[in-house]
Length: 289
Ligand code: G1P
Image 1 (spheres, protein in one colour):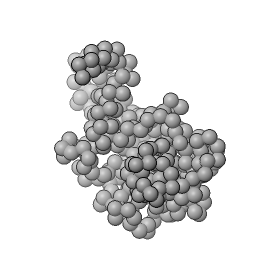
Image 2 (image 1 turned 60 degrees about the vertical axis):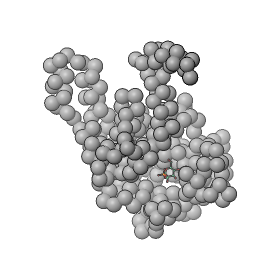
Image 3 (image 1 turned 30 degrees about the vertical axis):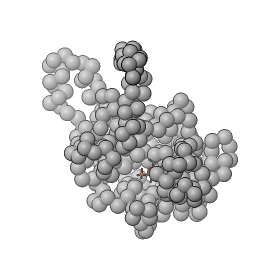
Image 4 (image 1 turned 60 degrees about the horizontal axis):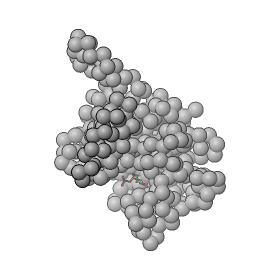
């Protein structure tokens, strides 16, 4: 059973400036919830009960968000605002949430390495805190857990992207072993369009066995002078094998302005309490575009 998840949420939100000047990108709201809450909800829907968030300077509001707020609860109770009360109480009850501080921003690989003591010897899921993924086949983390239970190795979520944008991602060099499942031969972080072995990009969700920490330890810096998680995956692939799962569905990287706008619209249209009114308005509005 996979019970633990790690959510790296330490990086700068440069691409969403100025909104992220004094608040973490993971706390930017989509409809009415911060991005990171969608990420936590995906983990919980996948059976995760214990979450470690790796945070850094300027990220304290994430800690506060997942803590209880007795004053606010009391005020809402006095005012009889039961719906809001339930919504905010539920946030702190989603899972057992822990925090660790990354001391320097040295890259995603370094952030995940901070989880080693908390994770111990168990397999665990990594979900990037600024990325929402949705799939008609259920939570993507759960799909990775299922693949891990079948293959017994690390598994990463893959998404097909336009060849022209591969250099933004980590990319798999893999062999398809069953429909949408790839056995990795290698991974390359941010390859050039010419050198990319495929257009299957690492999509922000990972399932790792605990030996990933062995490969992260003393890992030299890679692309962009950062300690790259993808480089540790390469070493693990060579030593022990690794898989990729191409998932059906969407990936919203809210660090990207265009994606951010689209995500708000798509997710508002999925909300029972908003969708009818919002759809009617959107139809009217788009007539004049
Ligand atoms: C990170 C990973 C990359 C992955 C991407 C997905 O890159 O290093 O392998 O494809 O997330 O969003 P970053 O976006 O931090 O540059």
